[in-house]
Image (cartoon, rainbow, N blue to C red; front, side, top):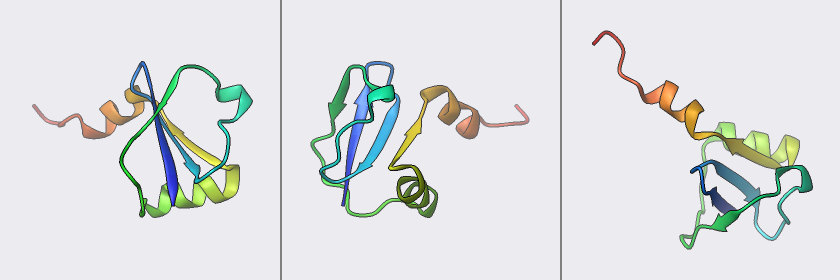
Length: 69
Protein backbone atom coordinates (compact mmCIF):
# COMPACT_ATOMS: atom_id res chain seq x y z
CA UNK A 1 0.00 0.00 0.00
CA UNK A 2 1.01 3.58 -0.54
CA UNK A 3 0.38 6.99 1.03
CA UNK A 4 -0.38 9.80 -1.43
CA UNK A 5 0.12 13.48 -0.58
CA UNK A 6 -0.81 16.63 -2.51
CA UNK A 7 0.78 20.05 -2.07
CA UNK A 8 -0.90 23.43 -2.36
CA UNK A 9 0.49 23.65 -5.90
CA UNK A 10 -1.07 20.22 -6.65
CA UNK A 11 2.28 18.42 -6.74
CA UNK A 12 2.07 14.69 -6.08
CA UNK A 13 4.16 12.75 -3.53
CA UNK A 14 3.86 8.96 -3.16
CA UNK A 15 5.47 7.06 -0.25
CA UNK A 16 5.32 3.52 1.05
CA UNK A 17 2.64 3.27 3.73
CA UNK A 18 3.80 4.53 7.11
CA UNK A 19 7.02 6.26 6.00
CA UNK A 20 7.58 9.93 6.93
CA UNK A 21 7.84 12.67 4.31
CA UNK A 22 11.51 13.17 3.31
CA UNK A 23 13.02 16.23 5.01
CA UNK A 24 14.21 17.82 1.75
CA UNK A 25 10.64 17.52 0.40
CA UNK A 26 9.08 19.20 3.42
CA UNK A 27 6.39 21.79 2.96
CA UNK A 28 2.63 21.83 3.16
CA UNK A 29 1.50 18.36 2.13
CA UNK A 30 -2.04 17.06 2.60
CA UNK A 31 -2.58 13.33 2.80
CA UNK A 32 -5.13 11.93 0.37
CA UNK A 33 -8.06 10.30 2.14
CA UNK A 34 -8.45 7.60 -0.52
CA UNK A 35 -6.68 4.28 -0.10
CA UNK A 36 -4.19 3.50 -2.85
CA UNK A 37 -3.59 -0.19 -3.39
CA UNK A 38 -1.95 -0.16 -6.82
CA UNK A 39 0.30 2.29 -8.61
CA UNK A 40 2.01 2.21 -11.97
CA UNK A 41 5.26 0.29 -12.46
CA UNK A 42 7.13 3.59 -12.88
CA UNK A 43 5.93 4.88 -9.50
CA UNK A 44 6.50 1.54 -7.78
CA UNK A 45 10.11 1.31 -9.02
CA UNK A 46 10.81 4.94 -7.99
CA UNK A 47 9.45 4.29 -4.48
CA UNK A 48 11.60 1.17 -4.18
CA UNK A 49 14.69 2.96 -5.51
CA UNK A 50 14.38 6.38 -3.78
CA UNK A 51 11.84 5.78 -1.04
CA UNK A 52 9.38 8.20 -2.67
CA UNK A 53 7.98 9.38 -6.01
CA UNK A 54 7.30 13.05 -6.70
CA UNK A 55 5.74 14.71 -9.72
CA UNK A 56 5.19 18.41 -10.22
CA UNK A 57 1.97 19.60 -11.85
CA UNK A 58 3.95 21.19 -14.68
CA UNK A 59 5.36 17.74 -15.60
CA UNK A 60 1.85 16.31 -15.90
CA UNK A 61 0.64 19.19 -18.07
CA UNK A 62 3.34 18.47 -20.66
CA UNK A 63 2.30 14.83 -20.90
CA UNK A 64 -1.44 15.49 -21.29
CA UNK A 65 -1.28 18.50 -23.61
CA UNK A 66 -2.81 17.52 -26.96
CA UNK A 67 -0.38 18.02 -29.82
CA UNK A 68 -1.12 19.13 -33.35
CA UNK A 69 -3.87 21.61 -32.51
